[in-house]
Length: 399
Image 1 (cartoon, rainbow, N blue to C red):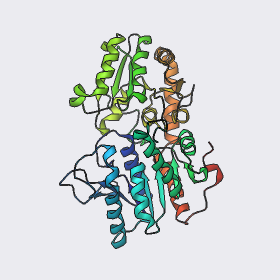
Image 2 (image 1 turned 180 degrees about the horizontal axis):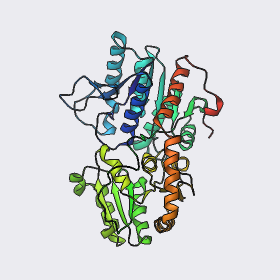
Image 3 (image 1 turned 90 degrees about the vertical axis):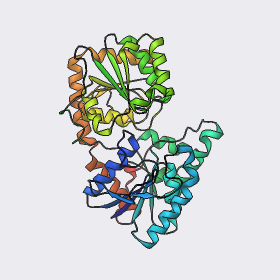
Image 4 (image 1 turned 180 degrees about the vertical axis):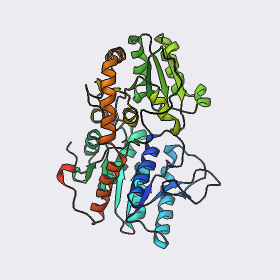
């Protein structure tokens, strides 16, 4: 089957740690490994890029000219999606034509639907995250309206968790259009064996991975460190190390660490190349993920594949990835005291950490392999193209 992935904002060729670009790259590679022909269409964001680049997995990345050849913030991409759609439509009319289009993120979905509908090509949509429907009209409301319209226009929406399904149903997407397929993890790259980042062996290490934004709960993690004396907290994520000094998110976290007198035990690393992430996970005694609201956190899954237990907040996809009391511990969101208590108990219990790590590794390999994910997504493609049986009701999300 010929599959067009639309990821206008996130190129799988980028060597970064963003969850969406890693998802697109790994899913595309897994589908190509299942004998599908995959092309990823992304916006040309700098001059000099080749029109088509073949990844090692055999996936072709196609650079689309839509707007200036320079990086643009997300809020400026919408105005260029018409050009992106026209480029796709013309290319698919005169040349290679996909059997199905899979769009990632809402702006990609707008371009995909506009292009594919003229040609009768079915569209599958993955949102990855939804707008905050409680946001002010000038920030989140218009995006939420686009997401609602997209959810009703496409042939199928692939959600990554029950929490995302509930959010889609709340904004008016028909439940019958929804199918849950969790994200996958590369268990050949993320393994317990291999090099680990340098650390002080005498000081327990708690790792947190993610963007330096408020809803990720890093402020709660820093406050929680008051209850874990002697341990260090290492935060990987945000801008590159050389840009951390002037980053507002980093400055806010540093100020918070000073306020709660844990600055000597909190290290902000900044963003690191994706190839270095397994070493950071292996260096940790446990991973903490404390978002206030989230659909799917990828870092806990990667940590589990490296044999690292997880302490997380009981929100979103974390409640499905982490089995409370088996592969890690879950606590209420926005409760630094409860979070700190869970961290302290696990740090101080080596036997339980080992049991959690063993179970976490097994769960990551068995339930979240990319081979399994690609098979599930392939079944969705087969259904919308009329090449497979209708998706059973059990596969449709129950909100």
